[in-house]
Image: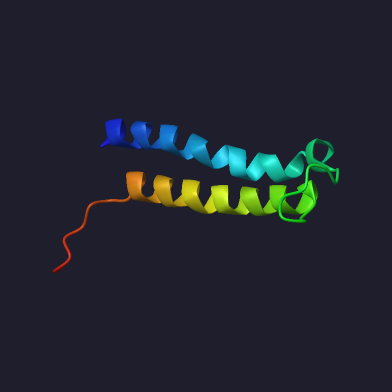
Length: 71
């Protein structure tokens, strides 16, 4: 059991980039380049939100306990 808990901690490291990336304001505080008329500021934040959803799903699927559906 402890071995599995240790392995799960590695998966949780994937949750760090979606939490840190939006905090790096100087990195995306600009207008150019634009995508479909959206300034970089907005599409970077949208990309961060999509990346967070994907990584949270991956971590959840990798670390969840396997349960029987009929219990």
